[in-house]
Image (cartoon, rainbow, N blue to C red; front, side):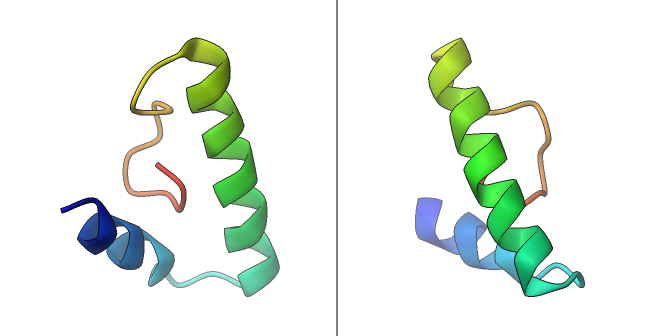
Length: 46
């Protein structure tokens, strides 16, 4: 289930550098808030 949402979110129509940035940003938000979601559903890394 987690892998499916990862690939679905990574298939969003945007440049690769933006996707990589969002993966890092959203994962840092999840770590900082100690939650399983960053609050941006549908974005890469969430």
